[in-house]
Image 1: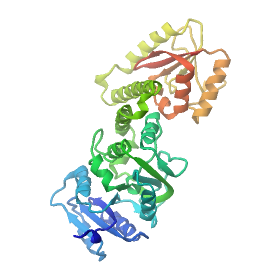
Image 2 (image 1 turned 180 degrees about the horizontal axis):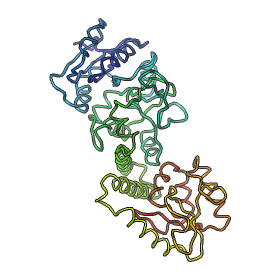
Image 3 (image 1 turned 180 degrees about the vertical axis):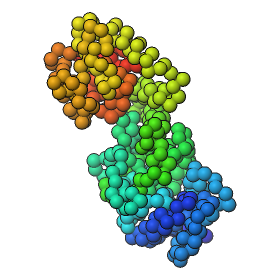
Image 4 (image 1 turned 45 degrees about the horizontal axis):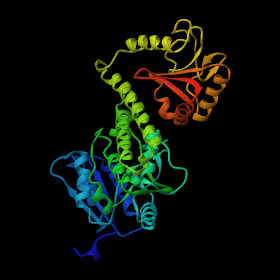
Length: 404
């Protein structure tokens, strides 16, 4: 085929046994305002009426490929890359809906920024009845080019930016350097490792517009692995953040010794959180809850003098007098009783400083609240930059509130 006949953009839809949802997704691909498209439907040996659904469409831009056997999601997605002929590629999940200007907006953003590898945009969540539902995570505050290394840095700080595959238009030349999808840390998270590899090499572009409707429903592997009790998905995210640290260590940003030290601290933080999560899933690998609590009590007694109150961040797991001769004060309180986690990091910092001004000089972050130091990244950086860490292990991180 001559270059003149190669479409500028390929929209690929890997699918398996979702014929009714696929029909809606396929319609949204065909309804794009930008029309120089090829639409690849890669059927992973569906046992439902997927072939009949695709046959209903007569648009010549559709190319239907049916595998004789189910090759699994990862191999199906990687076949998208090997079959792609276009300079730009977007993978549309078979239960999502592209808004009409999605491809046009993404293509315009990439062509205006030739050093960028891919776009990502805002998504709106919907359920199976097309009713709005919230999507966990956050977006950048404004559109435009983002340094790939800055994107990796933001993930390492704890920012949970939503990069949804159905808004990711990738430059094929960048894919040639970055490689394929991979299941490094979890089989349900095969796209983020690729985005991180591209970000380590190129800039990215955020389109600050809603580009797709993303379905959230119990039939999704992601839903089962991230948003149900006891799910293992968060462990994989820690693995991805660890990989981001590795990419940053290899970058020019690490010429700054202070930045290298910060990355080392983050690596230790992530390692402790991963140990905590792994212990919940595979308890025989780590100390029991009771063992950790007993050791924590002894360690606090060594750090905090008798008769001295201390600030305890513990997710309300311990009694105020669990350490003899010392009272554990909650960060957020009403009449001395805990009122749970702070609403945001600024409130957390203000509460910390109020307790410090009132005479509290020790802070203990116990392992049930390690997640606070990711979620409230500003609090973590405030403690790290202003005060001295006197102990760090898999049970606690303790600070003495004396200026460095």
